[in-house]
Image (tube, rainbow, N blue to C red; front, side, top):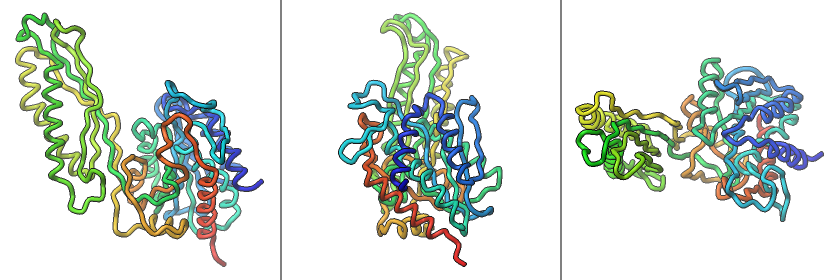
Length: 388
């Protein structure tokens, strides 16, 4: 069986696992573990606190530091409410494209990596090759955060990470961070005719949002010189606000769901510090003048580091050589690459398929893209093979 045929067969199996982030990924992890184990890889599987999801970290080649990580997330976004032309969890070929949920984001890259595992195992590699497959990337990179903590605790120190998000096999060297929060306001209910005798959580949430938007405008002045991001500054965005139960009742509860996409962690630190001061010095004291139990609490949904472009990048240089590319770009979407960079690794993003197809009905990856990805991995195997 050719590498491409094997990749297609594996991808069909992977798509058939409905690994929506709200559900378990254990069947997929067991399947990938079996394939890698049969190729002779050394495996480590770690469960999340619920025991229903897992990360897989596997190694082929010598022990030691300096390895290369092939990284992919196993979870996919939901299909509910989307109009698909075929079963989203059955791989379907039409006109040189393979349709199914996760085909490009990012089971195509995982399938190609698994298909190539026997080739890597048969070679005498000069440095370790790692496979890192995670859970819950789509809902805050939760598995990736757990993985890098586990690697650090175990003293495992790879040098390079290739994250196979869909880039049409282009080389991506940077993206902003993605920090997501829910801020909850607890006031005191009351009759709408006497607003001063209650604490209106909606009103305080509005004041909080106004301060957040002021900070958003301020961030525009902090854009780094020569920033290649679009827009070049750190952004904040309020996605959802909900509270109260009737127009004539003082709202006792309100929540604000918002995000920040920092160019640099200095910006996120600044925003969080300013908001904390505004709550401590202005909002909370005013609320507690009426109700001692009134409060404002912010819950961190996820804080995923951005991937900062750097002048010297081993990962970029390696993937340039493997793909023949000469330029690296930045993207607006987030990945797990910044987590690997935070460990001191050189990280880059390159994978089959287009981000334009991700999360949509009739998601697909072109067969030609999978073939190009296999070519990159084959050249990586040749590059890593020890010379006599």
